[in-house]
Length: 410
Image 1 (cartoon, one colour):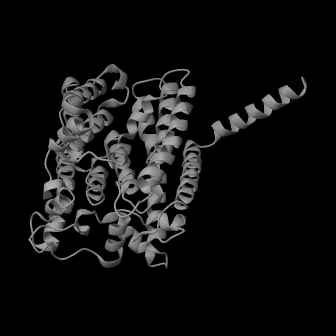
Image 2 (image 1 turned 120 degrees about the vertical axis):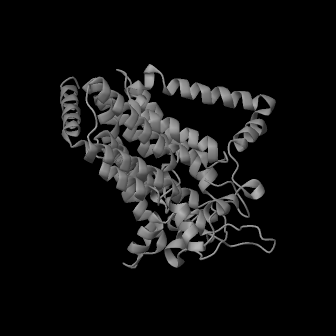
Image 3 (image 1 turned 90 degrees about the vertical axis):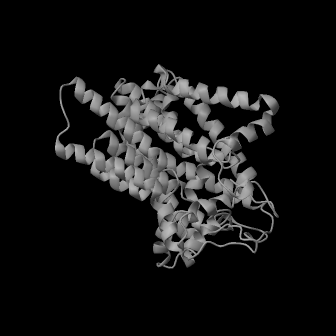
């Protein structure tokens, strides 16, 4: 026994060294593949308990689970395109329609469907590939941000934790269903990487593509403004002034990031001839038939916590802002901190807080890099992974599984 132990340790060390010598992108993709296999097993198991509904037959399987919820709208876009007018009811009230959903992901699925794939398979493939690209990009983005402000060891640990937690996050099964989170995240990561490297032309093009993927392009303008202001201040301290061509590149990036947030609403207006086609259609999902800023958060806080709800909400938002501006998060850099602040501000302004909030929070992926920036944080990361996988089961069983005739959306 005493002779076998050193051999066992040697083999373990050899495997560990081989793992560390594997290109980091390959390691991230392996974690992503394992995470998606786990999610597939969870979806397949939950499918056994999926009731018969308009979306799924009795005895549903994994493939049937891919077409639930908003995947129905994306299938309609991929197969039939968009309506040429805003659908309205007999009383003139705007009805729910595909106009509330962005076109890039379903059109990519439509392209794959020309090979004979079903929409569910094509849409899931788009999400899987985009999610893989996003996972690799998250590691590169967070590593570059941390390496500029911390040691190489901190950068390695933080980037790894960000990528791993991105792959296993509770709503990560959305990376393998026909939804738009994965393509949007891949483009968002690409945009932030371009911004980090000062490649403003490619960043502008990526921002425009993101403006056709999900309604998350609006906060980009805030990030760009912060980035350009800090760059101008740094140049001023160094005694340098932006040249004419460089100034044009900066202005072009700012214009593109602003346009990205308006691109789909303007396109929907052009398609239907109604200037408020997008916002009016979005309102069809809201109480009262319109999008109201901030007020839904106030109401839900009172509903959940009673009279103290609004106070707790204000304190929570203030605490988050203070934390994001603290030395603890400074290691992420201005661009990533600006994104985390601007995106939360955007959610507070336009979102009706409900069960879909869990899915929206995956866009705060840079915060995963803070989990393992300190020495000895490996057990902490493992605990986060175990909790995330357990909550993934809860997310699928509670929210993705549909209980007819109506249920809470994922």
